[in-house]
Length: 250
Ligand SMILES: NC(=O)c1ccc[n+]([C@@H]2O[C@H](COP(=O)([O-])OP(=O)(O)OC[C@H]3O[C@@H](n4cnc5c(N)ncnc54)[C@H](OP(=O)(O)O)[C@@H]3O)[C@@H](O)[C@H]2O)c1
Image (cartoon, rainbow, N blue to C red):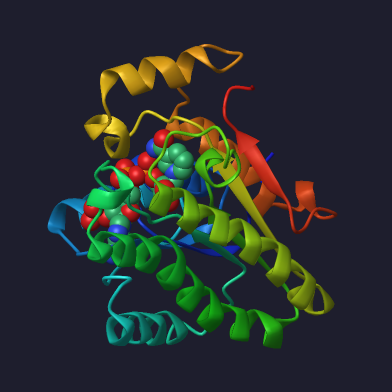
């Protein structure tokens, strides 16, 4: 069964990791996709075209830096020119800062993390939500993290945890505000998932995190994409304002 047929989806940060897996998963379920990347490359364009022909769907690659407001507005305008609804937004792009002790953390690092993980996602969401309000329909998804939920036990840096906790707060608030327009707002909160993002993380931290889960292994990007698929589709039509842990249990 294809869960996203006739749906138009915008996914941010599709070049690699969870975004790439979500692009593949959503395409396999019949979605038409605006596949966002920070900067467009011929490699991404050809791999998006391959995925589109594999599943018989439309994939429009689109490139802009989410931290550049003018570029986001221009990119969004390009999307609107297609004269198609945006049924689903997946705010996936994010960064994991270098791990430093709090007193040694440059304030610019805090700004960068809050900007990319929170403010940029919220800015795009604001633009998209205006269309969804007119449509009186939509699904908005965020990539939170267990780091934004386990605030007393997680070992992620404070600014990463804060940026993801801010998204959790946004999910709760936006779900309430947008529900009258039939817009559902949810998030997934992954635990440790094998992507490039965690390659810079110390092996001892990875071991310790995996050991603390019930399933005793890191997650795969496809497993997060499965949870996003559920929340994007009508399978979750009565769910809003929720943060779904995809973390191997604890
Ligand atoms: N992996 C985990 O263990 C884990 C756990 C919990 C939550 N998450 C969250 O899941 C999401 C995806 O993570 P991932 O593991 O797949 O990370 P990843 O492999 O590092 O991919 C992140 C993507 O975000 C894009 N991006 C970052 N900053 C951007 C910007 N300013 N403008 C446009 N694109 C930007 C990157 O673009 P480039 O390709 O150009 O760098 C990249 O494609 C993130 O929000 C992350 O915080 C991940």
